[in-house]
Length: 251
Image (cartoon, rainbow, N blue to C red; front, side, top):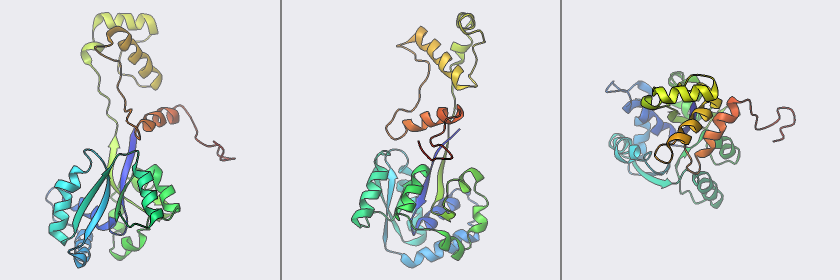
């Protein structure tokens, strides 16, 4: 189950995204596309790029690793500006409408990218992709990100920075407890085991909560503002939910 994938957007977004490709190559020599990007970016040595980032752990990378490395390679400083995830979209729109030029590179959640692109906030990156011969590199990006989340109306507006995957952990001691297994099967008619459907997820979670709360609860999901919606979307889509009618486009 994939959650939001964040993107680096903007005129210099291509250069910075290519840096991530270089530093993630585990010591392998930079590929030609990355070398070309570094050389081109070096012409702007001495400037500072303001990068809007989700507050928290995410900015530690550009602050402590890729940012300093990018400055060493190109002479371009990276200034990370943090904002809570539920405020990033609003701040981006406000600065765009004000014409402040406060941000050079944006950290964008994919489901917000169409609104930003159609509002004229983002610059298409196709010209830079072609100028620095980056098309071949795009073929190495997982299709779920490359084909679904980089483009708006056929134009490239972002490059992948982070692809999230939900990981399921469970307490083996609770699931393998003979008393729990017997009680659960008597109530629900199937064995207590890691759930494979959202219905079973709810039933198992409720069973554990009823027995162990408040010391132990049956499940834990994101409830942080700006992130809780993804927990809802996972279940809504899996159960066949549609946000809009395909014919009328009414909610």
